[in-house]
Image (cartoon, rainbow, N blue to C red):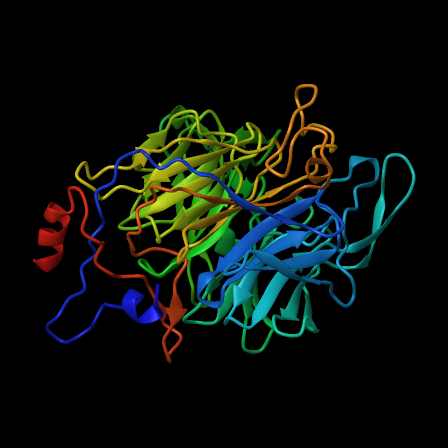
Length: 476
């Protein structure tokens, strides 16, 4: 499918570009198209990212202390880029959390990989005190050569984690989620410098979190802190970042802190960088802790949640979230991804070993619809999609890792039970034979114009069953 066909939206003074989304039934069933072996195997990894316009998938691979690079046109692993100084890899003495790396990974300007890393620590004794030798960082790797071009140290005592980009303003938001850090960095992709840091521990007025909704009580004078920081995305529809916070802590002026609900923070793209809106996620939704977050079409934001359910909320929510759809039984999720190539959300349900699939809606029912879950493997908490080929990428760890198999002789997507493939892990590529090739507006973007504005996929869907109504809508 050519780029010319995809960029079929002409912008003029009197011409508006309207989105048509094809009708589709809940009949797409994803199966393994191919598997991509990973030299050195996969026992620990974190976030993945796809830039379909340059045929590239990247994965933060802690096992091999590398960023694994896959050509999505051929589905072959082409590079395992290490960093200078090296990525921390798997580092968890005595179960120490949030000290491994790489963690978050994105592709910037179609020429750089930005990957977050943990600090270098020395940890001895019981209990386990740790001394920071080198703080956490964001490492920039040249996509063509694999050379580390910049290391941006951010002062963190534990890992720098997930990150996302405002393409137009060439600005990356990165988060350090440990309670020892609990801050956001705003980093220029032009100067590679940190422009601002916002604390989410209740001490920073620019990081002020407010809670609202049924059953939420905040005592007078109490402060609210983030308890964890998860996936972020920039939303060009509204001009703000959105950031998933799985839980909060309510800190009174005296006494003991209490647990608060999860929230989504709406954050400004300009200095002074600050939280401008807190969207509280009611526990009554069954979403007890938003972790994954993806920007969908219209006003949809997909949340991948702990608890029983995942949900889709309205990006115009103020106070308590306006829920567009409740995805019953799709909880236990981490990373989520919206694929505008087929107007679907993918929900990586690590706890259940499932990949949830949800039609984003806009068809004859005008509401999201569930498709069939895909059985993956316990621990498969990452997903990303090539929106031009409608290929879905799910990293799968070795089934020898404790907790991956819950029954004797279990298999993984990487091979039959007991096979070398299952024991090594892999990157599984999924596809659906009845997948709708219908292009919709949403994140991620296809390309950037000369002014670095995002160029969305805005084409009319192909003619097939029940499209006529949507095509009439598009011509109005």
